[in-house]
Image 1 (tube, rainbow, N blue to C red):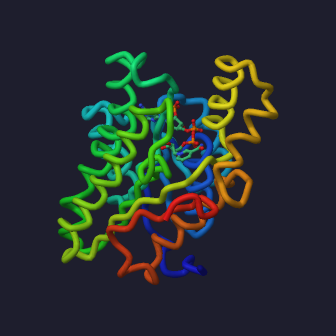
Image 2: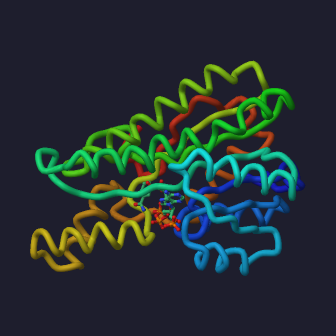
Length: 257
Ligand SMILES: NC(=O)c1ccc[n+]([C@@H]2O[C@H](COP(=O)([O-])OP(=O)(O)OC[C@H]3O[C@@H](n4cnc5c(N)ncnc54)[C@H](OP(=O)(O)O)[C@@H]3O)[C@@H](O)[C@H]2O)c1
């Protein structure tokens, strides 16, 4: 997976690049010589990651807002050229039994994880097809491949992301663009810490017990590290992965396949 020479000198967008998985992806891409625009809603997080590499540039934007994403594209592409790589990573997860899920919670989860993913990649599609090159990668989840209890909107949204990826892969197959999803199991990030906290609050179990129970979903008995997801993304961005499209790649220690 030494893709660096083949992909340097390009411009990538990583949504949710200020933290967790997105930050790891941004640093990995920047490390190969790619200019990376990261977005999210919190300026402070974007500034922090931009401070870690001269090749990372933060622009605040909300993936659920088409106007906000259009203005991000306008500014980032005029400053650093068209996006060659788009990583739809921004996401959020809540947790409630399905019968207690409000319409507002359902809608918000779909807005960020599914509609946000669509609004992230849509502005890139025509240009990539015209240039006959491009990489689109969705950070989905094992929740896009199997069901989990108490996260119905998240599971529905991530299954939707995998469907969106497959549709776009079919649509772009002859254009030199590849479209894939990576599907991590539990990754050690803020999102995981929030899930552990929710389990503690709702069940009275200790943080250690909650942590062990989530880690046990991975047959390897551990959490995935953000850098492991970034490594798969880097490989998908390289020339060596030119014929890999339409795939949902599970990064989960064998939890799903
Ligand atoms: N951690 C896990 O166990 C796990 C497992 C499988 C898949 N994933 C997926 O991995 C991706 C990254 O999650 P993470 O674990 O790295 O969690 P995280 O640290 O909470 O990152 C989520 C990122 O999304 C951004 N975001 C949320 N809503 C946004 C919006 N409306 N507009 C723009 N940015 C928004 C957040 O930035 P702002 O708050 O500043 O907007 C944040 O940087 C998500 O798609 C998640 O579903 C995570």
